Image (cartoon, rainbow, N blue to C red; front, side, top):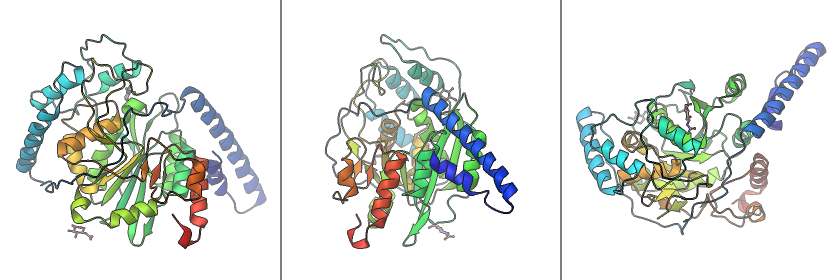
Length: 415
Ligand SMILES: *[C@@H]1O[C@H](CO)[C@@H](O)[C@H](O)[C@H]1NC(C)=O
Ligand SMILES: *[C@@H]1O[C@H](CO)[C@@H](O)[C@H](O)[C@H]1NC(C)=O
């Protein structure tokens, strides 16, 4: 919070004392408003915590990399590519009578519209188990993907200059998280000629109009992307898909994209260094993070990740934990394309894993990504884990502290 306030207060510092005084009182009022809103949101929208991490998080593994042809622009070859990918997917879908599995197979018959057409009809589901309100809401909305953009950054990736695009999933009310990232590992800068750019991906908060605050924030930082949909856990897949559409249009030449949550700490310089050392094969088909293999849906209705058996049957595909993972920018148009015939799934990192599976791109584990089990703080700040690239569930204060400690260290002792 104090970060936002500092920025608000920093601006009106000039000319006469009277003006200064008036502006100061405006700042105080703005500050109070922000605090009240923050409290209101915190009470009404408790933060999502990763109380129950996925059941399986085996050791990271290294797998061979497949190479995809660049996606051609002409319609004929795109359709041919689509068709062969669809046939590939057909073999991968677990055949079972669950809702998702049935819908997925129907989608592959090309007898129904792509998964981006809005329809308000509730699907007929045989639900022997309790469906949470959220899951029901997902089911009624799952076809809808053409949400309007409220805030855009069309000039985020000038020419061919973006090496790494940081695409951070944030919620509108997380002002302090975003500011901590901007001030630390997310700073837009060049690392030896390799440019890092930053965008935050936002939906909306229905009960409160945060738009004046977000507009103000964006006028200073130029890094918000906002779409007109409710920012909830089960809408994260939607956020992913809308982002892919955006990246394909506005940042298609980014070499790599790091997709992550707004509560991760990232050693950006180390990630840039590792990525810049990759060979050209990996450069074009990388999907790297903390890989989860052979995971199964949670069947406990109390879990945040609860998926009823009537909804999905089978294992999950191998996927990189959604707290933070990196992939090749050149895969963006491919991912966007396949996302239209991979039936929406409420858990976003699992859904992303499905899309990569269709493309035949296997996730590569890297021990530096800690999205499920985090090492303790002391270890981190004294930098003993030199391989660490990304760690999950850090508060803005912790992020500032960790970054401060690391950047103050003499170069020889940096992690
Ligand atoms: C960007 O890269 C593409 C392909 O590598 C190239 O054709 C184009 O000329 C480049 N543009 C600039 C401005 O460097
Ligand atoms: C996703 O967003 C839409 C549009 O705002 C909303 O109607 C729907 O309830 C949301 N879905 C979930 C699962 O929260």
